[in-house]
Every structure is written in C-alpha cells, then in structure tokens.
Amino acid sequence: MGTRAARCKQPAPGSNLLLGVMRHAAARLEAGLELTDLEARMVAPLRLLLSGRCRYSALHAT
Image 1 (cartoon, rainbow, N blue to C red):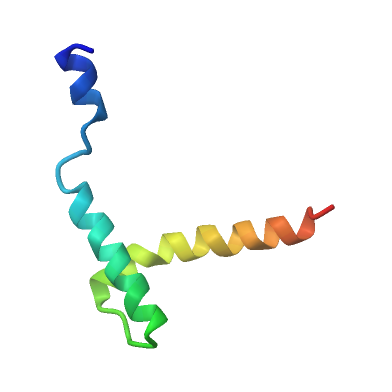
Image 2: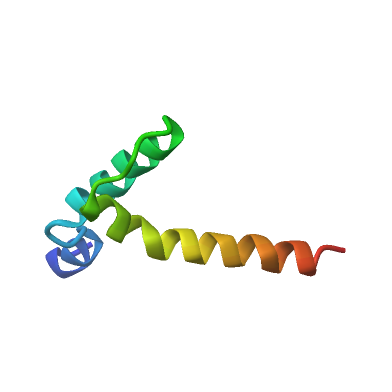
C-alpha cells in the first residue's frame, strides 16, 4: 500500500479525544454519576440513535 492509502486509514486529528470523552461519559453513566456539559452533548446523539435502534429492533423482531 502506498502512502495515500495509509493516510486514508489514519483517524482524523482529535477523533481519539472525542472517543475518549464518550467512553468516559459512558463510564460515569454506568457509575450513576452526573455528566459534564461536554459529556452530555457528546452522548445525547448516541442515546437518541441507540434508543431508536432498540425500539426498531423490538418492533421488527421475528
């Protein structure tokens, strides 16, 4: 693989930081702690997405 292909596989700058914030938020939620403003903003779309997916799965279970 050339260098162009290698660059395409590299995560965007800052993506590890954002992933870390989301993982930290998940750990705080699991521990029953309140989220910081940043954590709440990062987790809100994931909660919406996952709650919709769970409802979709339950409605379309065979």
